[in-house]
Amino acid sequence: MENTRELILAVATEQFLKNGYEKTKLSDIINGLDGLTKGAIYHYFDSKEDIFNEVANNIGKQNKSIFDAIKYSNDINGSEKITKLVSLSINNEIMETITSITPKLIHSPKLLTSFLEQMQKVTIPEYFIPIIKEGIEDGSIIADNPNELAELLAVLLNIWLNPLIFNTSKETLISKINLINICLNNFNIKISI
Image (cartoon, rainbow, N blue to C red; front, side, top):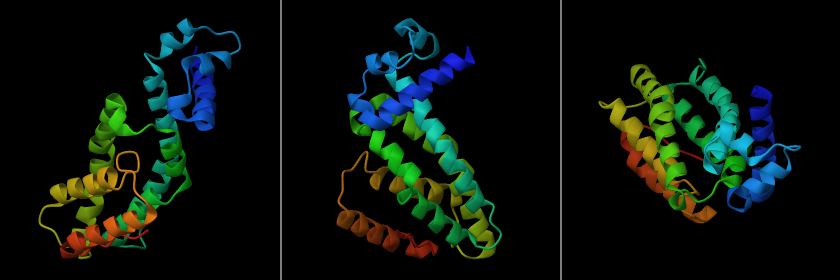
C-alpha cells in the first residue's frame, strides 16, 4: 500500500517538474501509474492540490536539513544566521524548483492557506523565533519583542518577497530588500541576496 502512495508521488513529482502544477492533469499522473486507476489516487489523496502539497513538502524537507545546519551552527551569531537563512531562501535550487512548479498562490486559496500554515507552524517557531532569541542573547540582534520580530520577518520574506504572490523583476527584488534592510536596521539585522 505504501508503495502505491510513493509511486503516485513519484509520478506526480515528475509531471509537476515537467509541466508545472497548472498544466499537469490528474490524467497525466494516472497515465504514468502502470494501470492504476483514478480510484487508487483518491484512496490516498483528496485532490491534485493534496498531491502537490505532499510533493512540495517532500522537496521542502531537503531545505530543512540545510536550514537546521545554519540554526545549529556554533561559528556564527544570531544576526548572521538570519542573514544566511534568508539568503538561502531567496537563492537556492530547491526553492527555485518549488517556485517553478507551484501555481501563483493568489489563484489557489488552498495552497496559499497551506503555505501560511507552514509559515506559522514551522518557519516562525522553529527557525525565526529561536534564532532571534539567540541573537538577542549574543548581542547581535537588538529587540525587545522576538516573537513579533519573527512574524514581521516571516511576512516580509515569505509574502512580500515571494514570487508566487508578487511577480517582481530582479531589480524590484533588490529594491524591496534594500527597503527591508532600512526597516531592519534598528534590530541590527541585514538581509542580502
